[in-house]
Length: 140
Image (cartoon, rainbow, N blue to C red; front, side, top):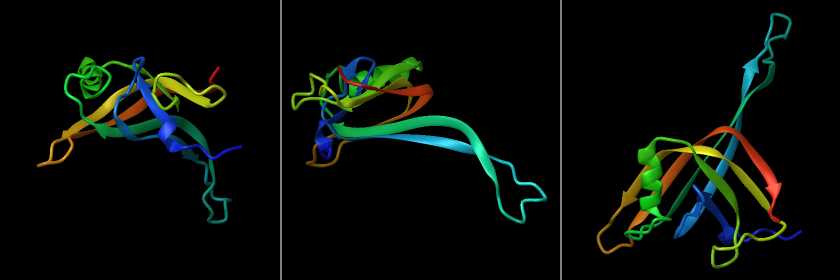
């Protein structure tokens, strides 16, 4: 088993690989339910609760690029769920790496920002929250 080169990990939102990414992240959480009683001897006891997932990405802004900030902005403005895939792609970002894990689920973009500094490359950041299950499979 080889350690993953993080450069290959990318996100696709609404069927388009998000272009010019410099980093991306996905996170899974599980809430807990308090089950502490008077007989718990002063110790907190818990059981499982709701599972959820969220994530983010950041990259360089490229004007007019449908698979970049503009596409993310369209999904944000639509205020609807879109499909997320999170997996590894070849160096061109066009073909998934066979045999690697792929995560997919429905998300809503919750935050989108663009930064344009003086004599700096313009950047963007996107955050999303999942709706329903995040499924894991293996790339064909």
